[in-house]
Image 1: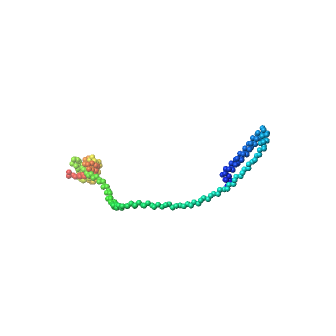
Image 2: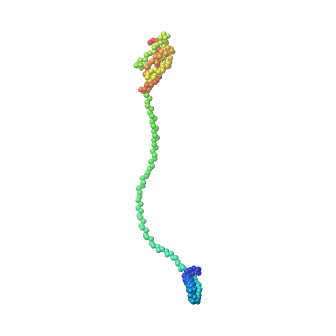
Length: 224
């Protein structure tokens, strides 16, 4: 605490500087006197008679520490804020109730059952054109009757031969077969040879001629 007081007071420091300067000055004076005495001995003798006294440094005065003064007690009194009367509330707005018309009722219409889709009508088949059979008895054909074999005539052979003929679209016989024999080979052969040369009316499907089979009976009698 004392060192702080010395630092804070400038008077002891000045006294030290003055003492130090004074001592330095005396030394310079002595050195100067010696220098002069080397040239003038009488002056040196006078100078040697000078009394040199050292000034003792006076101790710095004691400084008592400053006691801190107690701070005055401050009472913090919080004054209640002055309550101002609240301004009167504005009048509440008058609400007028407006009766709204009820919304029209909505009715969900149930889905109507849809009729099952009618199946597509089956395609109507085109009418089949009529088919006409082949003919051999048309008058304009002028087919000759088979010749009666002489041997069969002498033997008195008679009979009926039934032939199965394949008639082409051009009206010719492409195949001749014996469906039922007369019982006499000569009569059957005579019938086959003659019918192979005949002309026929071909069978037709609508207006189109086609190939078809036809039965041709041949009768052999001696009364002719």
